[in-house]
Image (cartoon, rainbow, N blue to C red):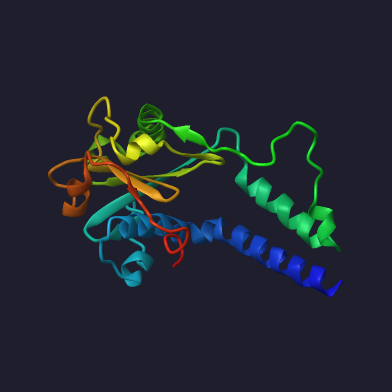
Length: 219
């Protein structure tokens, strides 16, 4: 059917764009998306020209006085490139939309309740994700960098408690500041006096929530 063909073509185009986005040549674009989301959540003015500029290592994104080093947290064992490749192959081989339908076994819920990430888990995951970067760049270099950790977990969201009570790090790491973006939430876990004002102002405060389902991640 014509409708099926048009819909499948859209799926193929979206999957191809997703594969392109997660390729090495577009690494900076992915990192800029995370920085853009943080700035929007904190209502910090910025320009797209700032985000597009590629700074020298070890800075990933330099904007609004921040020198962001981006870290991403994925589900353990998740193979994102494989997922994207297999999805694209399925779309390209399909002739009808029905080929994407899968029956739901008896007793399996038709909806998924996201797992809530507590403040303690958030702090532990952030510190764990940053250890490799600390080993790579050294404490001296990290002291002049603003770590920005992106939680990209499937079926997991921040606990609602974090919108009232921020998590506390067990110790002050070597970074100039440590911020987190998770879905439609953002918060700053730590910031030294040398960090940009907008990060220091958010330190120790509850997570900020984007008020609507759109507008945060779009360019």
